[in-house]
Image 1: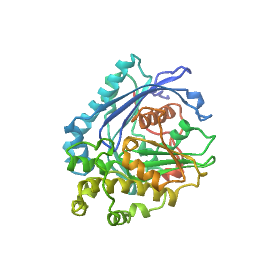
Image 2: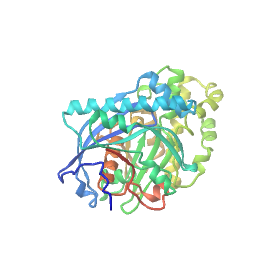
Image 3: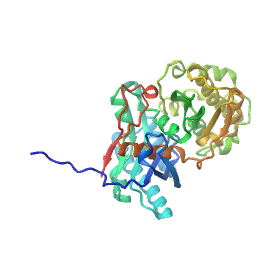
Image 4: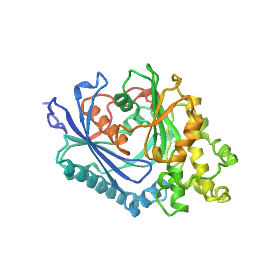
Length: 379
């Protein structure tokens, strides 16, 4: 006699789904929550996104952010990781409740990224701390989570997972490049026929750690301290890092460009004036992006838009360095969505794709053997 297993999602109407997306990025500054409307019947046309209903950012406490950064630096005991998972679950739940209360609208389901604390694609392993059960109980709806490991089980890197969502958001009619400057810089390129994405290197991870060390701040607002001269000697030495010699597909994180990297380079950095340190780190992020795009990227028509998102889009020196190094692009900020909302929107779309039974990964970008429906579902 057969057994019918209960689905984690109730029957959903064909009218637009309300989907909550939650992202805690490598900048480790807090949780971004969005609620969007998705047309589940429009995935085949590449137009599932309907509207952004709202966005809310919940900043981590100083203590929680410090603990997250310690986890990323491989400096926590298993017991501390266990407790951190619960603390992050409560942080995600608080951000979700606050957005739902403000909108006075209940989502049909949520998609939870969690906080990446370790990412080892060469070993087929990644760790995003999240607690979908705390979230599900807090907002009384199903949760999709742990989207990266299915791709890794298929031989992929589990990242980047945004190329399909960028295509759904930007469309296919014209060529474009979308550069997200979070803790780590990742890019998606569309030349009108082919889609390509990978992690370029550091964006704000090192600059934010430098702000914490030398300014006592979580970040340097608008890059105000990065007014000095760039050390070309340091720049060339840093660009010999193995990540920049590795062919695609590839991904990276704070375990590569984080506290360990900064500690290793402290002696050379502290020989520079403070303004020069910040300027050199900003130039490093920009030059890493430029070299990666030129070396591995699909050719795009001259003057194609390069759309900047993420916290780094607010860093004036970083943006100036990018403009100087990438004159072949028309560089502009992506102002379609509020700052910080884009990755959470991407995660909401990926969750909706999973519920609709649509694959969310892009094999040429991650290296997976085939496409797959991503994530685990918590009723």
